[in-house]
Length: 249
Ligand code: NAP
Image (cartoon, rainbow, N blue to C red):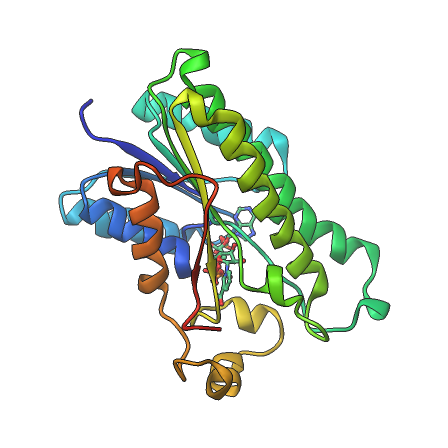
């Protein structure tokens, strides 16, 4: 198969869905994973197929190792190659101070955002690294501006998990740089998706936009374009970088 294949986790909606659409438009075959929303994932696969693209949706909770192994096995079975991974699946929980957080909340955020990114990166490296007979590739991790702003009073757990994602990006980039794999991160600011509703604040973009230097929230497509650039050969000498897509925030 000549078509390059990209795996995007958490791509049933939001930023992941935009990345999947744009990747398909640019000629990549896409494997998109989702957690619960099979209807949205199936609709996106059908939409990509109707435009002449190639897509596969696989249900997988990235925080569960057995699910990640099943996800990559499905990808191997259908496409037989992997050229890029986007670690996009990520969660936050309702806004609260650290003193009010229980362990299960913090564990869910870290297991999805950090453990999930590690497990998927591990499987991608096993397939793409020249050390393992692969042809090289690229990994893009979704961080957040929260990693360096801290998100006080909202979700310091989420911010800390994204700081870990940035350190994963830096360390892994150096580890596999001589094996044909580039590893970078995109750090979005406040982007208009459902994630704010899952934090109990669906109007967050509207509420905070006057504090953003560009005076508006970003769109998922604006993040997708940065991710696609980092995946592409246009970014051939860029690795270990964190690219802010945050309207100056
Ligand atoms: P979103 O609209 O809430 O969508 C989250 C996606 O992740 C959904 O496809 C969801 O699947 C999937 N997902 C959730 N938990 C999962 C799990 N355990 N395993 C696999 N998939 C899972 O989020 P978004 O705003 O597009 O955010 C995408 C990424 O960008 C996240 O990493 C987020 O932290 C980061 N980010 C977002 C913003 C922002 O302002 N929106 C800013 C900075 C960074 P289902 O639909 O099936 O539930």
